[in-house]
Length: 414
Ligand code: GLV
Ligand code: MN
Ligand code: MN
Image (cartoon, rainbow, N blue to C red; front, side, top):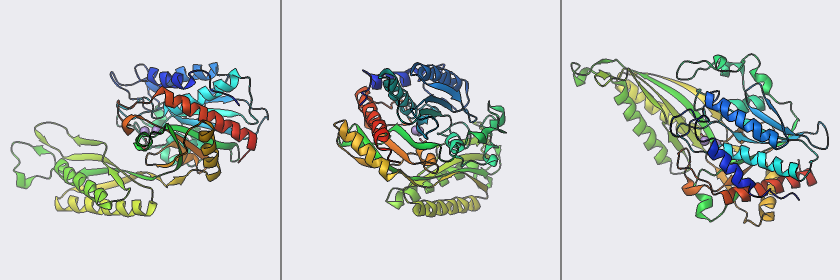
C-alpha cells in the first residue's frame, strides 16, 4: 500500500493557488483562465513540469488537453485515466478543476517515490474546456476524447469573434483526440463538491453517484434601437426591458418546480450599449438542469414558450440556439463500491451524494466506467473567488485516491 507523500495534498492545493494569478490568469486581479488563452498556455507549461517531476511522459493531444503518462507493468493494458479541467469561469475559484488534476499528479508522484508500477498505466489528463467560459460550448475537450463530438461543433467563435480554428488548435485533426474504445480502464475525477452537503455533515470526502442532466441555450432578442430622449415609451421596442421580464419568468418557472430543477441566465449582452440609446438587441445564455431529464426537458419547453410569448407581446424578434445537451450520467456502481472501500480504508465515514454541477466525468461516462470523489469546500461556495479547500481535506482525498488505485490494481474490478 502506497501512502501519500508527506503533504502531497497540501502541495496540490498550493499549486492551484499558484495558478490562481497572472500569468496563469487572463484577469488582472482574480482568476479567469479560458481555453487556449495565454493563461491557459502558461498553466499548461507549469503543469507539464510538475507532471515530468512526477515521472510522467507529457504530451498535448489534438484537442490541446495536456496528458501525462506513467507506464504500468503490462504494456498496452487499458490505462486508468485521472483528470479534471484546467479552465475556469470568469472571476472564479482556484480549485474547481485544477485540484483534481493536481491530486492526480500527486498520486502518481507517490507511486514514483515508492518505485511502484501498477498493472496498468496511469494517465493524468488536464481537460481544456469544461466550463464553456470562452467559446459557446462546454466540455468540448472531454467530448473530443470520448469520441462524442462532431466536426460541426467545432465551427464556433468566442465573443470577440476569434474562431476556434484560429485559436491555436487544428480543427482538421481535432477529433483525432478520440481515444480508441477499450483503451481506458476507467476515468477517475476528484473535485470540490461545490455544494454544502459534506460541510454540513462534517465530512471531508464523499462518493459521487451521478451528475444532473444539463441543457444550455443562446437566446437572441431583437427590438429597435432608438434615441433615449425622443422615443416615447409607447413607441419603444426595447429588447433589454423584454429580457428583464423574461429572466424573472425563467426564475419563477424554476422556483415553482419545487424539486431539483435549476435555471440560470448567467451572461447577458445588450447592444449597442450606450446610456442614451434604447437597447435594440440582447443576447443571453440560459442553463437548465435537473437529475431527471424528463423534468428538465419539460421545464425547458415551458421556459422557451414563455420567452416567446413575452417577445411576441412586446413586438420583439426571438431566436434560440441549443449549444449544449448532456443527459444525467450515473457513476459506475462497481467503482462506487471501490471508492466507498477506499474512503473507509482512509478512516473516513462513507457518504454517497449526487452532483448538481457538471463535470468531465459525465462526458467520459459515455466512453468508459467513471468514478468521482467529492471534496468538502468551505460554505459550499464555488464559481466565486471565495472558493476554499482545507489542505487537510486534500490530504485525505489523496489517500483515498491512492487506495482506489491500489484496489483497482489488486482486483481488476473492471
Ligand atoms: C461546471 O462547473 C458546471 O456545472 O457548469
Ligand atoms: Mn465549474
Ligand atoms: Mn469543475
